Length: 410
Image 1 (spheres, rainbow, N blue to C red):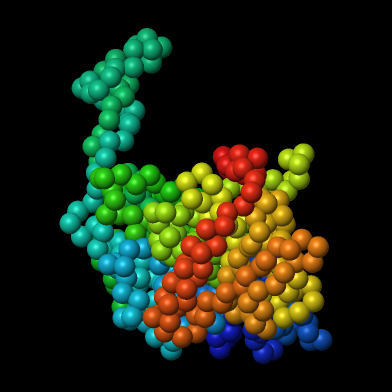
Image 2 (image 1 turned 90 degrees about the vertical axis):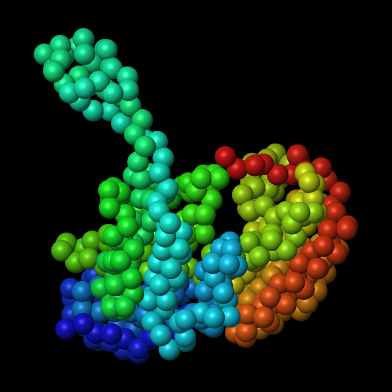
């Protein structure tokens, strides 16, 4: 018998739930940083605390669902960060707040894969090496000399024009991962199976093979949206949590990370081409260049850094939880010689002041909210306002030269 708990809100907590030892052990092994298992006075009863991870996790005997604080429409807008507007209409999402979130994520990914491959799979040249009765490509003479008794089937190396390339392997892996979710809605499962049939001849690959993005070229550029979302889905799905014979399936997304990536994509699109946002640069904290930091937002005009910022999905109310949201930004602005830092936040427990000045430094920290509980039109208006503020702040760049401040990541 499988227990299906009522959905737990993000950062919320379930009521007491009685679990047998096998289910409890599987849950503890699979939870990781995504869920917090709280013991009670009864050793067979626990409560389950949600973190910033939303989605669902299933172990034998138990299904846990965590719902985001943001509306479903805005969640899909964030999930589709970097996806072209033509691929996803924010105002006409087919999934509502009452529907299963995992089914919505799966349907969104299936729809993008389907539309990208509808006219046929991209083919490419893949290097092959095998024994053949007729010579194809290049004969491996060294191998022939070492094993002359295999002269009837010599070893050849050749380029094969095939659909079994990394892009299509990514899509096949994503579809199979979603089909492994035991609670997937029947209509979504049918769609996934229909699209999967298109990938006959494409090899099965592990999700770890697709951690590094495939370079986008003119041949596969129409795959770009679908590849971007497919990688996110594979990152969110954990299909190999093992505890003996106990397997856990999950599709969970870290809202903290998602908010940062979405914010970078949205602002970068609004500020281009005059300003660009970087996220892959290390900032030197000390003059000896021994300590580095990684800001969420580094705004450049050409090679010049004009603004630094952080994106915080959740902020504390007071004390340490609130101060730590500002400490990093103060360090960034100080080390980079910038007079102003920008903190973009969402879901603050207590709305921070829109501006503060740091004692003995004079550095300004500007705080701007992005509310994700309203319509997407309201969200877009907030993003436009932040982009306008960034342009205004960029007119007063910092004083230090960029090469002494930032080290490009390798």
